[in-house]
Image (cartoon, rainbow, N blue to C red):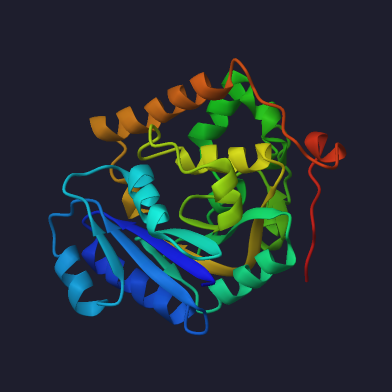
Amino acid sequence: MKLSVIVVNYNMCALLKASLSSLTKACKHIDYELIVVDDASTDRSVKMLETEFPKAHAILNEKQLGIAKSRNLGLAKANGQYVLMVNADTITASNALDGTLAFMDEHTDAGGVGVRMLNPQGRFLHVSRRGFNKAWENFFKLTGLAKHFVKSRLYKHENNNWVDEFETAEVDVINGAFMLLRRSVLNEVGELDERLAMFGHDIDLSYRIRLAGYKNYYYPKTYILNYRKHLGSKFTWSYIRHFYGAMIIFAAKYMFRMPEIKMPDVQQIFAPKYELEK
């Protein structure tokens, strides 16, 4: 089997339906399986899933476990050569999977790839290129971890950075909204860190992929629409606890004993190396 698609949902029935519809169209010419993990939704998500997508393999959590653990449950059932972890609040372009799978087949050094993300109004989301938002950027700078994320250019902002939207490039972090990962690499580096239940697990996994000597890429020749509904309100205690708690866990994991990245080309540790494709 070529591809396993894993979608985690929590109370996003309407968006989930649209997301799965776009994914099934994008997988039209691909040997794939669809795994949907419902994280104890209280809306009509499960009923909709059973009615509209009966061929999907559904995993129904009895209580809310968080995105990381739910994705790991899906990963345990996945049989594909590649694994796509995609959020339930995204719409996937019809050519997205053909293009990204071909890219991964051609780039055997790649552990994973992310794509260009747009908001519903069509505006480019810079987190697709960088992998994380401003808060995580500030966290990396304050803790000194930024020096280990050289391809995110945390200390080098270019005025004409609009070109980054359309530039195929090696990156530090693949944003968790759409992560196409090589299964053999996942087997080597391990599953998602479940302590990072809601936030940061994509950053941690991307970093471990690089530690193992593989590359992460940003592929802009296709796109997804990202509604970002999974983030919820930033003013709730749950959000604050999970978001900033993830930073504390990440710091405790890497800050005091930062592993050395095993890269075959030593130069790449110190400066980004970009691949332009037209």
